[in-house]
Image 1: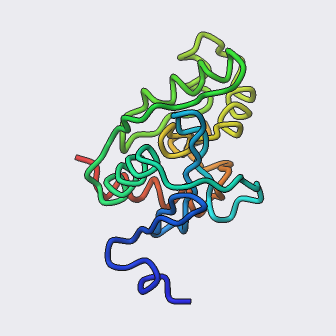
Image 2: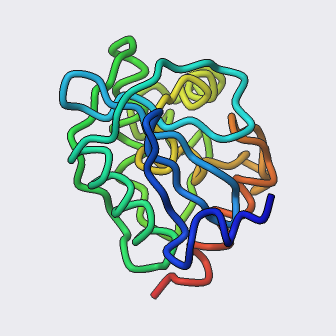
Length: 169
């Protein structure tokens, strides 16, 4: 199937299942629960998700993701349903403070949340992030500046970092 013709020049479509964003990293599935974005799943995700109709919030998230991929959005403004431990939430909060086009190490994040010896636990919290891109876990790298781990795969992490590098001003 030719994706370009299926999704038109705008690169997106809505269907009865969920909003999909077509971009250079593949499809994204935006999941809404109770008026909040609760998950963004990569096309290569093995996780199943319940069907839902497109909503104004999913359309808003879709629009903001398109703006991000076009280099026109550096921060997201969406209501998020963030579920996790207090530690995980503190890691995700700190991740949101990493500026567009910049990276930080797991160790940097551990220090920033006041737990300098918790770099591995920070890595696990990154892995548990259900709202990638919006909560930018792709900006977290190894202390040696190498790309390590990403739920969507290192190719997607690389693509996101390259996208930001290209549009960074």
